[in-house]
Length: 259
Image 1 (cartoon, rainbow, N blue to C red):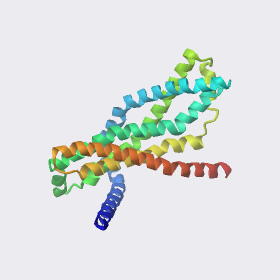
Image 2: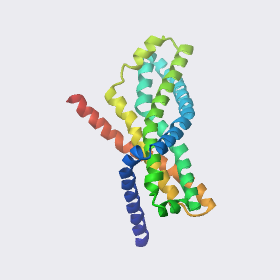
Image 3: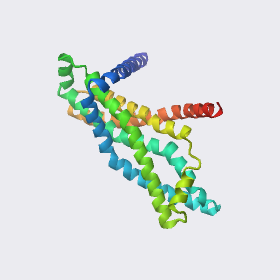
Image 4: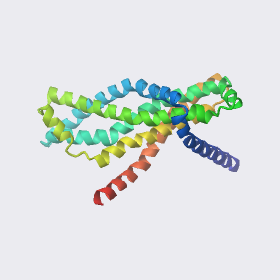
């Protein structure tokens, strides 16, 4: 049991060292490996655009249907745009976008790097002097960190468009009134941190997926297992990071609002 605990501590230490190396390599990925970073950015953003758009439309439409039914019972259905905008843009949209990217890129990055490990491409790069962290991991981490806030904005916009379409089809508000009431409770001090926190989630997803792929066993079955672990690990990490960061954001918002 003691040996198992020590092994876990060793793995944790290696992962912490891996994270520090990735963070240190991010400037190099931005300025010296721009092409690779842009390619990965296109992969994450353009590849995730359809699912983010469809998910946003679905969330907006379904949230409108479910919430309006409850608000009508109390005669306050006119507040629906305000409630829906806050619920989607402050929490549901950022978290859902992060989970979608975790599901897509967590599997893709882990399987990709696990395949490179299987074919000994990682070792070949290291022998030739190309650090895998700087050449492979850092561009992917940076691309996910930049692309995820943009996908969050797209998802939020599509969710509001879905709710607006439902309102125009079955509600009583006009476009102008819907837009005005959607902004009633929204504050930049809440909206901006909620969107920007997804950059951290993107980094977490890419780091865990890349770590999983680089440390996969050298067998064909390990590629599939790495993809599964990449998805599960990145999703759990997003949930955990969200629980930790939201109270901090709320504390900062309260401090800034009273200053």
